[in-house]
Image (cartoon, rainbow, N blue to C red; front, side, top):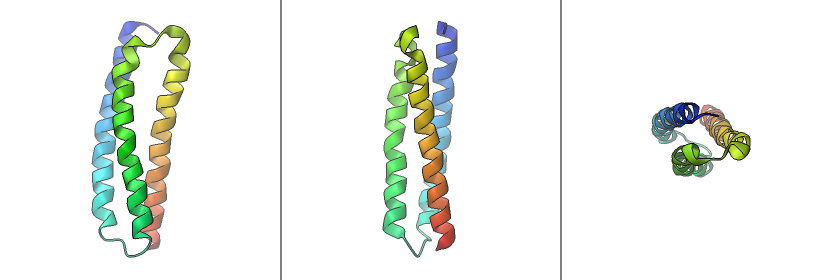
Length: 98
């Protein structure tokens, strides 16, 4: 992948991080209203928060990843975002069940 593509990827990751920060903040507000499974829900939200600095580091590394390692690097970033989506859905189901 060329340098412009990597810079675009970095920008995309940074934009998605900002979006997830807002999503996690909103989930935090909804957790405050939950009646059941509160500790479990809070744990999942904290797990989500802990993923954001990892993604920030990955965004900063994007420009320096060798071409041979790029597919694995991108897959790892994609998996972290997929995990965030799974955790968000899990929390939303738990909040809905409260």
